[in-house]
Image (cartoon, rainbow, N blue to C red; front, side, top):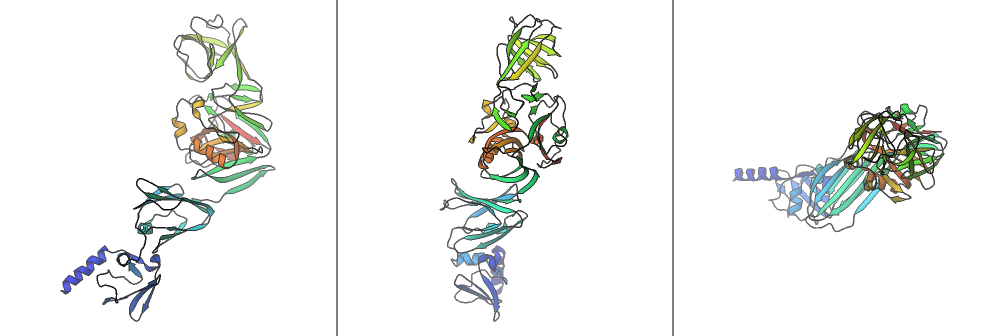
Length: 486
């Protein structure tokens, strides 16, 4: 009989979950040789070597000092809410908790941001939360109470942000927790400051930006040459990477006007256009002409803006079946080919109906390309896609010349130029995200217009010669940049 009792005790001990009394909302003390646990109007006493005091049954699993068996409280009907299992997933600077529910969540979603700490009461028994892998810097205390699982959270530094929302089929409750590093604000010059801020979409997204109420913004760089943005503009307060370029040759892709001189031609995407400190976003209205050997001029389309005669300035295949291609270097025709033909770096091409060139052309003949904005702007730099237009979400890359959507779908750092309705200019880089999410983030912060200026390794914000936007790899040399001077 004694052996049977010992086996029963060992089996119960192996199968039980002993938890600190405080995590069950109970107090513990030793009193007259007994272990006493109290809470919520209940009193439980256990005498070591004897068992539970009446009226508790002898079949209940035993405690161990200040650790109380969860199964005992379940058997006693202590918990008046259903039990839910928990699963965990890591998120950048945070944690996702998913409770698998026996029935749909009976309350509305919750959200809170900006506080050092918070206390949540989840209307379930969720003992798995006691084993949650809380992120470093977050202090969490879990208590399993009769009416709820209490979760007390506190950020050791910075702020805490959480979202609590239900999902259906099957019923789940999702808790997203984020630790937000302190925001930053530094004065750089009169009317210019550096900021690190969060936007919520609803997940938090940290932005690294220079905000300017005045200054001189210049496009800097040299077609065909690559360098880190800071090296393109020594002495600038801030430098943001510019537009797109061919990675093999450094050929700019898109409009680039520097002090009234066209350095690169449009590619069918939205451009930043400006004079002084007045900025605009639009598809460039660009007038281009080809001048033939006899001095005659003919209007031409450029790159994605095709016409009967089209000038191509980006390396790669050009022209369509049935067209002729004149390859040009230094204003001289170097080859006449059937389309499609490969345009090498450092050259441009004129495509035309094969039997109807705009004027007689031969190898060695002079052929020049001229173009200008209409109306003229002193500066322009093409980027894309458009993110915001006059206070509205405007992200739609299908309207711009993006043939491969994959780079825009990748989660990566994003560079953008934006401004508020009051005229404050923002040069910024985001944490890894997608352009569409960045557009919503900027809209939530009060941006009026915004344009993406490339992403991934090219996305860089340099402030007084120091890279402020984080990137896990080495910064990528670029061809063009936007430099802000006092």
